[in-house]
Amino acid sequence: MRWYRKNARELPWRETSDPYSILVSEVMLQQTQVDRVVPKYHEFLSKYPTLQALAKARVQDVKKIWYPLGYNIRPIQLHTIARETVAHYDGQLPHSDEELQSFKGIGRYTSGAIRSFAFKQDVPILDTNVRRVVLRVFLGKPRTKPSDAMMWALSDGLLPRGRTYDFNQALMDFGACICSAKVPVCLQCPMQEFCKAYRKI
Image (cartoon, rainbow, N blue to C red; front, side, top):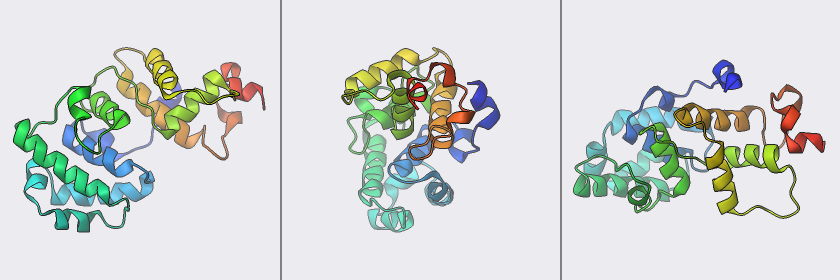
């Protein structure tokens, strides 16, 4: 958390608590790098500023504005989420994990991100960066790959209740900037003393 206070990335979706805007960012960030998402995020929200505006749009137009982010099932799913939210939830994204995951395109991670970042609920997230940080720090290089259930339980157990928003954002930034996949910057890591992976270097 101290590292994050000094090194947090400035990202536009961190400047809002609007569930729809956060939904758009999280869907765009699936399998796509941050620097490619930022300009498209601004363009998309300028065209479709609300769930209602997106729900009224033609899916062909939504697909066009999504280009060139790729994984083109995502804009179709996002459009469907908007239409179903308007039809069944009065245009407001639901708060519960069960309801969010009932939408095609929203899995456990995206649901957790929306609940954590938009609704400030104390729930874990487990994207690629968070999974890598938690795995290295607490499990090092295990002989067998830990199960998803184990990783989710570990992530949940780490949460500082009431400060989950910043903690989850910090883990993602730390994984992207310090504990990266190919070239981790271990000598700058503030968790050297207790990181099990570092001890084995």
